[in-house]
Length: 263
Ligand SMILES: [Zn+2]
Image 1 (cartoon, rainbow, N blue to C red):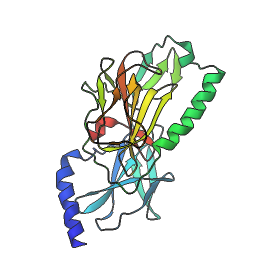
Image 2 (tube, rainbow, N blue to C red; image 1 turned 45 degrees about the vertical axis):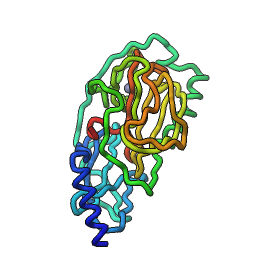
Image 3 (tube, rainbow, N blue to C red; image 1 turned 90 degrees about the vertical axis):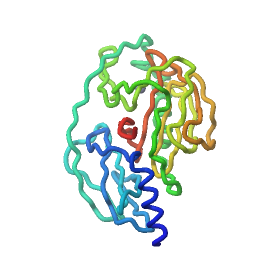
C-alpha cells in the first residue's frame, strides 16, 4: 500500500498542470475531495450516475459534471453510499442567434423526429459509459488547431426558435483538417447523426468521454485504441452546421461540460 501511495503521488506530480479547473456552475465541473488516498477507489454517484474519481495530492477527488440545466443551490453526492453536499453557483450564458437554411434541421418532419429520438437514446447511452478499469489521462490537447470560440453553453435561438443550449466547443477549421484524439482512449461509437453528422465518441476511462462531430470523414471504428494525437477523422460540416468546423464535447457522468476547463 505504501508503494501504491508513492505511485499516486508520482502520478499527481506529472498530472498537476493537467488537472481540470473547478467551476461549479451549470455546464461546469465541481471538484470535491471525497476520501483520503488509499488503495480503495471510492464509488461516487451523482443523480444516479457513477462519477469520475481521480487521485490528487493525498485525496481522491471527484470530478462531477454539472448539467447545463442544473438548478443553482445545494446538491447531493453519494460517496460509498454516504451523502455529501456541495453547492452549484449561478451562471448566465449568452444568447446566440443562428440562421440555418435547411428548415428540416430546425423543425424536423415526422420521419426525422423519429430518427432524432432513436439517436438521442443511443447518444445518451454512449455518453454515460463508465469503464472503471482505466484511469483517465486528463492532460488534454485541442483536437484541431484554432481558437476557442467560447461557444459552450450558449443559449441558441435558431431561425427565431429557442433550441437546446450548445453542449460543446466549436473550433472553425477548413474541411479536411485532421481531427486528433484529445487524450488516449478507446473508440466506443462511430455514427452519422441527424444533428451532429459524422461523429466519433472516445472513452478515456472512468466516465470521461469525448465527442468529435460534423466530420467530413471518420477514420476509426468502434474498439480502436487511440493514443493522444491519433487522427480519428477530418473536419467537415455534416449534420446541422452553418459551415465547416469541429464540434468538440466532453462528458463527465453523462453530462456535457465546458471543454475549456480541461485545457
Ligand atoms: Zn457545436
